[in-house]
Length: 137
Figure 1 (tube, helix red, strand yellow):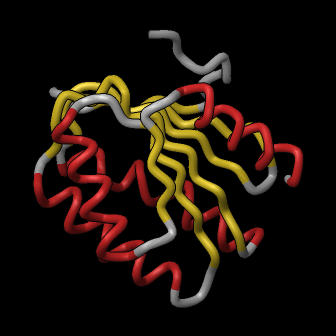
Figure 2 (cartoon, rainbow, N blue to C red):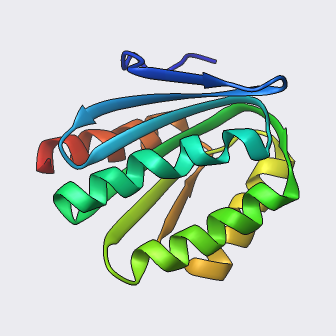
């Protein structure tokens, strides 16, 4: 499995997982998640987007979850709450690349709960959407 060629601007780690953040375009934030995503990593999934929407009003999030092995259930619950709150005043679109069944199921549950989430199992389609977002950015 190949990773995105985007450079990492910021990396956050917990004992069980990591979040890498890249800013490839004005309205685009790219997250690479790995391992088990636990509550200590949650702020690192929210803060960059909150800062982006404060500056630009719209953010396209691209979240590569292909190296995620699992997550704390509180992470999914808090992300749904966060998306509902942020979308009340801003525009956030999420593009999520998945591999593991548990992550795919969690992404679909979030999509049902809040909408506005595109889920990909094919990296080429995910990267094509990233290319379109970067072109528009």
